[in-house]
Amino acid sequence: MRFQRWALAFTFVVVLLVSACGSNGADEGRVQRLEGQQLEVAAVWSGEEQANFEKVLRRFETRTGAEVRFTSTGRNIATALGPRIQGGDTPDVAILPQPGLLADLARRGALEPIESVAGSLVDANYARVWRELGSVEGTLYGVWFKAANKSTVWYRTKAFFDAGVAPPKTWEKFQDVSARLAKDGIKPLAVGAKDGWTLTDWFENVYLRTAGPEKYDQLASRRIPWTDDSVKHALRTLGQVLGRPEWLAGGVEGALATSFEESVVQTFGQPTPAEPEDKQKAAMTMEGSFVAANIVHDTKTDVGTDARFFDFPSIGESKRSVVFGGDVAVLLDATEAGRELIKFLADPLAAEPWAEAGGFVSPNRSVDPAAYPDLTTRQLARALVEPGVVRFDLSDLVPASFGATDGQGMYKILQDWLKNPTDVDATAAQLEAAAAATAGP
Image (cartoon, rainbow, N blue to C red; front, top):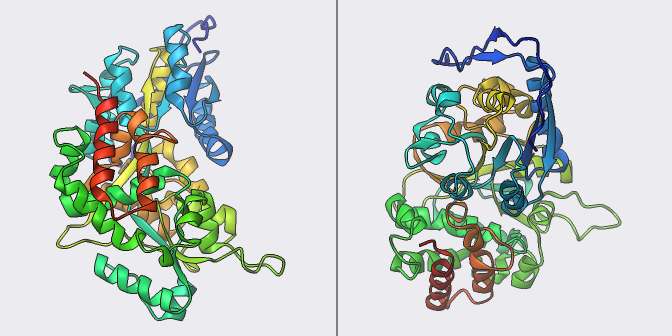
């Protein structure tokens, strides 16, 4: 919401921000005092995520004197922001979970460019890919604040120890480990397929490793169709694992009835006398770095000892690759306070409160690794700032109605594919039809 500014006798510069690598913008390195000014920030976060982000906002308030109000939009932030943009009643800043949405809003003229606000901080503190993902046609609109490494497989260490297996590095070894676990009576995988986005993450990791980064980019931008042989090959490869009902906790029907959160509990939940069979139904679950927070919060399991992760295995001769997601801060109303918040979110100091709370990794390479609470989280963060083949979550790059909406598009089509993973031609045709229907002019 646009707040009427309170009258100020004066504003003045009081503090020089010092980032870990030395930010190189004199104007961007200063904190403006904003006593009496108010601003609103909108994001999808709720619950624990909202509470942790509000710790970040409290630090901003302490440093500037501004008053910040947080609005949780629910999962579909595009739907929440649309009417407010049309009515001229926007929040000052929004945190968007999709670069596709950033691009859409920028092309509609709903976002303010931020090069003069935080451009030098972005260059100093982020790898080039994050500037590119925050830009539209060469103009910077977004600062990436939170990220997720979505190429991690989490496993229960006791299950691996009992079966005598080690974390696999290749797709073939991954299948061998799964077969060994199944032979020992342990379901290899818990898959939260009730949430269709988990299946898009599986597909994207396999596609990046089988088709390569160039094809990945071409598919995301519709320079090749979803009926391309590379898509069919990825679906067949994915079927070598997810097409084995005996490897899935609850089989196919069970996976389709399991949410992401439940898949974590199925892997790491602690059995009780009252519920001896409802926990630890599987040895592994594949999802992003945020799984660590769910493990701690929902199962009280120790991350780093009882629960660990390994990188999504290579396929063929594929190089080390990471699919990642994230949340980008954009400026909808160029108020003084909104501009200062964007600047603050590009500084490594902004990430520290949430990093210390856990369940968070930052793409800002200047964040002090010591801010993260454990070695596991530091390893997850390192994967986002070290060189390698990295690509943003493909389903978040395409229009949300195709890639990020419950009950339709990629979510629904891949859920249907899981029921019949051998019919890849029909699945590819359905994906192409859905992509074409939601493509822009």
